[in-house]
Amino acid sequence: MTQRAEVIRRYFPNLPEEQASRFDAMLHLYPEWNAKINVVSRKDIENLEVNHLLHSLAIAKFMEFTPGSRVMDLGTGGGLPGLPLAVVMPEVQFTLIDRTGKKVRVAEAIASELGLQNVRLLHGDAAEVKDKFDFVVSRAVMPQKDLLKIVKPLIAKEQHNALPNGLIALKGGDLQAELRGLEKRSTIVPVNQYFSEPFFGEKSVVYTECC
Image 1 (cartoon, rainbow, N blue to C red):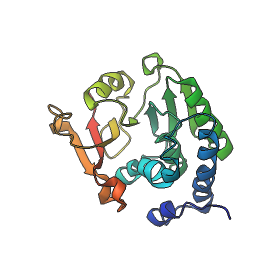
Image 2 (cartoon, rainbow, N blue to C red):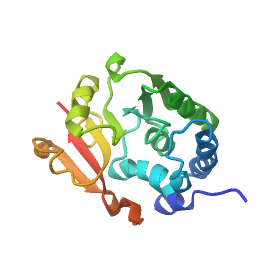
Image 3 (tube, rainbow, N blue to C red):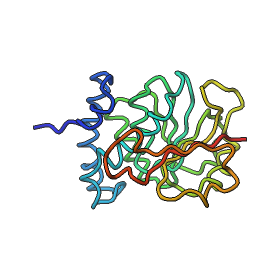
């Protein structure tokens, strides 16, 4: 019997079937690729739907980007959070970048097999990218202040969304020290406001207005 992404369907009940079926496919594609190239901890691959796919979608609960928005996923690894976000927001353009070529190849292959037309994969350093983006998203790559230094040259001046352009990161634990000095332009939302699974108890979406 084909495994279905039932948890994602529960939290996104209005998701069109074509998009929902792409999450079903991810539940098979990621383990298959992970057996060849480790992009998710092998101890954690059984928790793929909740700990990785649903976790990525906390950003979609926090903010639905305006169609035509340009979003970069910095340090995407095997495509998280970028690929799940690209599935639920097909009218948003996603650029996924990572320094590790073999991980980029996994994300590229999965995006291709899913038939995603709104995803571009880049192997390299963000400093080499000349394009501008409305938002940069990231999944616990580095401290917020360090991320902001990298992100600042990438953020477009034109505004198209409900929130000012900036950085949206998925983080865990106590963020008070990490965000010291950024409080006035940052918003922290506990992920368990969106999802009730115990995994999200200390997880947060952190938005920081850039520039």
